[in-house]
Length: 227
Image (cartoon, rainbow, N blue to C red; front, side, top):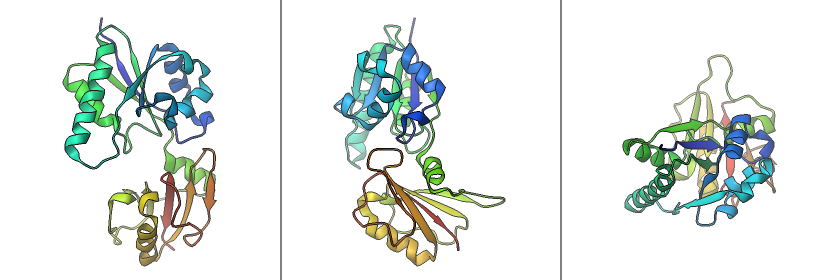
């Protein structure tokens, strides 16, 4: 019997935002895969263990996640991660792969998932609350109404934004080049607000573009709206 791999979203930071399904799967499974060299030090683990204390006693797999844009290095890391998961799947164990937020939004597990499927293993994605939905709720604002469009950008990887796109902009992963991201938003004439470390320790809320510091952290999400 071959096991099944699950990509399980643990939400943006607040353990109370984890889904009932995520909690159940973690409790029922013996093997948990966690991104990073130190599983218990990862953000996803620290969120999940607060909701599922039993996680501390599970068998943990460390999935390599190099911080690089080198495609060859990333491909090798994804292949290594898939191989580690497959070792346990072949023994009949299900493997829960914890991911921050939702496994369908800018998630490295999507590459591992594709490799597992290509190798003939069964997988399933379990949605988690996304950081932009949690941040909007924290700010008390809607993301889209009526016919509004919603656009999501990995801001740290862009030097320009298509200013002709109407609607609400979500700028994720902004912290590594915040000054440049703020300049792009200012030039578009939009109003912006942001949440840093949403639902985590050290959460900060910024009510305007001017309030966002240039040294805001990696987990800073910006919502920019047309005036």
